[in-house]
Image (spheres, rainbow, N blue to C red):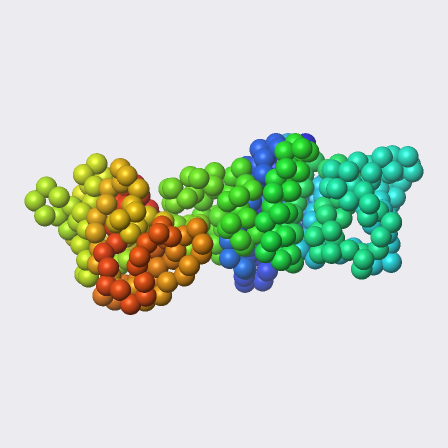
Length: 366
């Protein structure tokens, strides 16, 4: 298998900069996920690696070889598209074997590779069927199988689960993770779905408007987002944000939103003291807002008054949509809560997990 390197890669379409000075190093056997909203440049970055688009500036390396001018067929990559693009008149076997036949592999080698891939994916019984006889999940497996038989250095997957229903997407996510572990290959996966990214990736690269925002492990992106965009994109429901300023009162530091004021934990206050009286954005995740009756032991809890406007029962948890003054926010609370729509309540904010961002730069204050 192989490592992949983007070195100062830029792609322009006329006056539009789709990818802007992208620098990423993908380790051998890594599962890297490029994630971001539609139109952010993640698919373009993948197509540049595949050779389906020309690079405007910079270079891409597979292992230690620059591939800017290498034809797609000679890059030793395999790509799985959002559209499975199976030949409708061919059987599953012939769809998976087609690329190998073009490369003049002998029949025995083709048979070995197709049967091996079919066994890995659990589609041995489907080899004689046509695509129209398959479900969406089965077609997706065939498309992945067509990539596996190539035995490439790098697998590229462009939103391969977007055409599947919700239940099948969850199941197939797990299958792709197991497949990566079994093949011990380098996977680069594009999606707009941050849940897919969080559950499958060894590292995630968050992209917005062609610019890499942050690249790190899923847990680090969740715990320590670099900026407001990453904080709002990673996590579901999204992080709550409040316009605020930092106010000092004696030896204590408070986040003042105008509607409510809450104390910053003493061990974190020294980090934010240089920003006293400055405009900031206070962030806290829905799962860090609790019904005080069921809050986790040991958290640094501060009470905030609010009115419940909507409740959503999820079975294992309840989403509360709250309003405090002009501020709207979401809490994920224990399903045993007695809170209901229309109640005026107090909720506890776990200030140990709060985030503060500079209002002007939108960068996290560390």
